[in-house]
Length: 293
Image 1 (cartoon, rainbow, N blue to C red):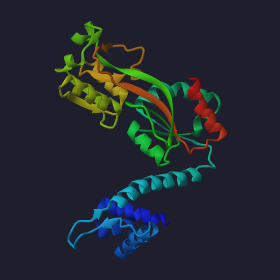
Image 2 (spheres, rainbow, N blue to C red):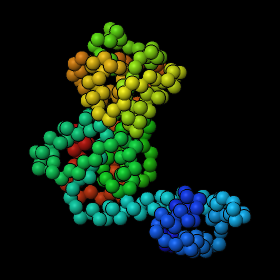
Image 3 (cartoon, one colour):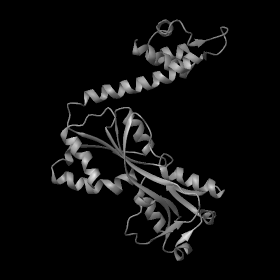
Image 4 (cartoon, rainbow, N blue to C red):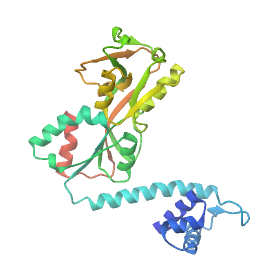
């Protein structure tokens, strides 16, 4: 089976247009038509696409839907495999981490790497957890240190759980709520919120707690920088919802509140690799540092 035919097919399903698909790959329209015909012959003549009459929209058959989903997985795995093979001879450590996990776990590991002259081996990528998982699956990074709101259960990934943390509310020491220790989330209905950008788990946790408390949070500012978020809270610009691991033990100018709602979101911190990833000795040593940290 020609993998290019699978790529043409998947793009055609997405575009629903032969001309646009051909343009995307820089080939002629008949090339796409022939690719679909080859695939249909490969699978015993089962139609993958249908077009009832010339001006009707392109429709995908049930067999086509099955092939589309499986082909997406195959093409992604092939891309990751190619990248992994290319980097197999390298000793560098292609690591991605999110702001929270990086702040919480990486400094101690970096100190050990410095002692073993391995710090220069790191190729760092900082992004939100959702983006890191996508890049890990695609082979763009080999190791991800990230947090999710749900346990990771993906057969393509090997995920080591490092910590499970509750979410807390932080306010300025000058805020009236600094006089209490616990709070219901619904009591924050009138507050201005400072939170992370949309692709970070803190935004999703905020949405989940707000849905539970039945109000829409008034978000005054979004940022990708934890230090800026905490600085704004310290200045009493707004309040914030953070995973406990994102709150330093020494929180000068900031008061931490425990939520007492029956509803509870948790942050699951993971060290993740592809199951197909075969680390070198140095890369394996790097991974072991998180197990002993």
